[in-house]
Image (cartoon, rainbow, N blue to C red; front, side, top):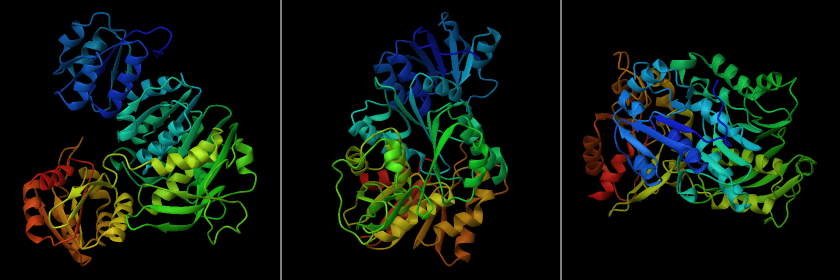
Length: 489
């Protein structure tokens, strides 16, 4: 396999350079002195930004793009690129070295002493954002690659000049098996991407394999409350690594107690660490702020943690970020300040605005029942009026496999407006429809209506909402445009 060498920059061409991850990798190589070119189907804000950084981009993917770049030494592609893509076919014909996006990311990580991979079915983007804020607050000058737009780094990528690199590690197609991180986080394991994994057993095996990819002497941080902890323990039993657990259960090395929510759904909690865990990491509480709580007399009670993200689930996620930061030797002062400054990444319970009648519009990327249930719970806790969800199901296979779970997760809302299924990478085989979700929700007593397209959803909501209601546009597709349109009128 071709190996990227930062000491010998070459010409790298990206097929599909406008993707959220591909664009970030292109930026990193561009900063490291590589000649970077790429192609995409159409121009976008991302490709415009890359062009401004001196990267040449072709629109339309044809063999002539590579013919025009005769010194290309490496071609990078994503799983979304079809086997009959003209550029990919040309690269194979000319026997140009090829790397998948995940393979390239894994090789880039090898150039950083402290590479950190954040995995889990849910919460990767927010937890990566937390770690980015902590590392920046601690003045570690990290390189960051995140699957969303983060204000503090001005996009989805930050290229630093230090040994610290933090990135999301996506399980789909086992792409994260190409990574060899110094520190890995497993936030949770859940039933998802069944078009690839087929069943939960295969998903658990995939995460267990990911755990074994850790560098010798590395650090593995795992949710100690999940039922698959022993699968992970067994996988790394013979490996020279340190395993740290986090969660709400008393058995965990890092846990949260006395969790409180403010009126906007932001949690605060008392951090509890097992005696000796902080000393083992080489960190200290330093000038950490502490407020008296009923948990103060618990052995290992630490400071009060204040978050600017929403939901109890993110309190749990933040424990993994604290554990990772302490394992890297960062003191508690910068950790707490970094967490406090970290608001959600774009499309993670993102406040979009208010209408004249006081209706609040929030957008969230949730597209799996577990994520939806967490987001709906936050919505219920902060809504001053009724809670509306404008939901766009994501992929036919996920909707079909988890249909009862989707209905259960959405049912606590007062009203659910359902859009057509967003196909993403799939084709409609006719076996599932958004009307099936409408029927399931009605059976649960929820006011649900299938409306199909976005303009119809906007019209229905405008005609039926009341003062001070809360609307959450929800899904991994372009459902966020509903909120944008409503606010622009």
